[in-house]
Length: 166
Image 1: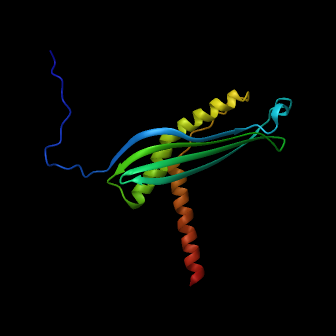
Image 2: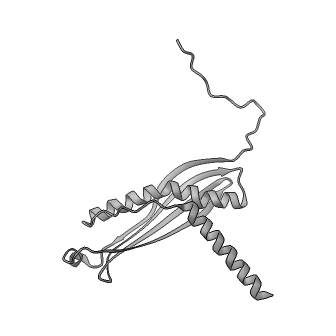
Image 3: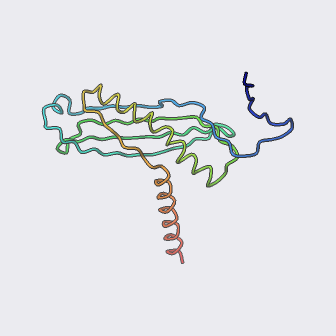
C-alpha cells in the first residue's frame, strides 16, 4: 500500500515572506442592459457595429485585501442607432501580499482582470441572448499588453510635460 505524502509544512517560527496571491471572492457588482430600439431592432438587417470599452478600478479594502472591478461596456449599433447597450461591473476580492509599487499595480491590472474577464463575458452573453439578440463572442483580452501600453503612454505624457516645463 502506497503511503500518502503530506504537503510540506513550514517549520514553527518560519515566516513566508514571498509574494502571495489568492482570490477570495468573485461577484457581479453592477449590471445594465438596454435595448432602446425595442422591436425595431429585429426588423432591420442584422449588420451590427460593436463597440467595446474596458476599464479597471482597484480599491484597498484593508491590509493585503483589494477589490478589483472590471467594467465592460458593449454598444451594438445598427445603421448608427443603438440596438443594445450592456454594461457589467465584474468584481473580485483578492488577497495580495509581498508585492509593492509597480509589481502590485501590475498584478491588480493584469492578473486580476484576467481572472474576472470570463465571468463578465459570460454575464454579457447570457443577457444578450435573453434579450433575443445573437450571442456576442467577445474575444480574449491581453491585459498584459494593455498595461504595458498604459505605462508607455503615461511615460510619454510625463516626458512631454517635463519637456514643456524646461
